[in-house]
Image (cartoon, rainbow, N blue to C red; front, side):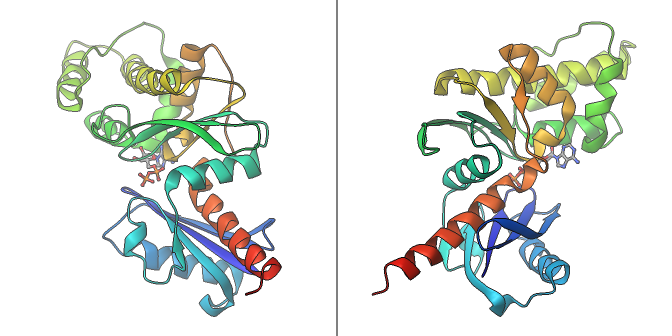
Length: 264
Ligand code: ADP
């Protein structure tokens, strides 16, 4: 039996096809989010990779900011529940999740059974989110997938004091024109994102092990900056950006399994 989870985010669309609730048979990420052709492109990629048809899907769950825009979904479920479920499946011991996406950041505390015990979210400000990193990568004439390695060469401490993305962008420009090394500026950018994420995690209550998910977890520089700030190692799943879609596919499977066990 196959189930499909789709996470239509603000910045990217992700999808997973799961077989019998325990094997990923296809996954896809497209770098455009809600209001675009992202969902259609993810579905096409998933069906091509798995060799399946949309009618082979027993149940489809949509999550993410754009979840209400997807007509093929049998159910919509919040990202918080999907992220908690995805992490429980991939990293069963984890008790705190830091998720940083394109336009929001959240800290989710899990109970011993993997259910959500508490969460704290920043969805009001671009600082501390993927958008902040996207803006800074552009100013530095690079791309977000290169930022993680760039900060490895940092030797001089530097800080970005502004909490506003627009002012922080001006600070980066002034660091550049003052001749500071790109590696040092990138590390300061990562530390600024980490500081905000750790603030959320401390408010939610940190209990280890701690995992990081979302597209920004693909940036090793942010992962290392959070580890330094918390003084704890982070667990990062193999493909952290598809964690919400995976959780959606697992919840879709649970819907079918519970309907089978409780026929009406
Ligand atoms: P959303 O669900 O809000 O669309 P995602 O969890 O998909 O967000 O994360 C999107 C963010 O992930 C982007 O803003 C970008 O900063 C970051 N990102 C995406 N791909 C990469 C990559 N290859 N390396 C580093 N960061 C990445």
